[in-house]
Length: 123
Image (cartoon, one colour):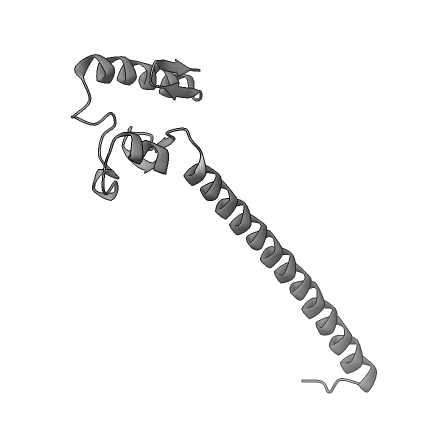
């Protein structure tokens, strides 16, 4: 094992300081990005909750993940949480609606995108 010179130790120290500075910059950028994402999510949630339109978010297997306040109010549901994770459309909907909505949802699912409304979907 060799003993390092003062210059070698100073060079290593400088390299370590530069690495720490780079890591701090990366962490700051990640924290900034995380804050932006959290803010966007909060804004989106607020927009959905205060929208006059019933908005639903479904999983790929067509289970309900989210329903906006407008939808909950329109359906006169006191507590939507028991319906989360359950198949949509709900069993209490008329069969004609359920059949049309399921057909539309499957078309959207097969096409990989689109929007569904009470009278069908746009893909």
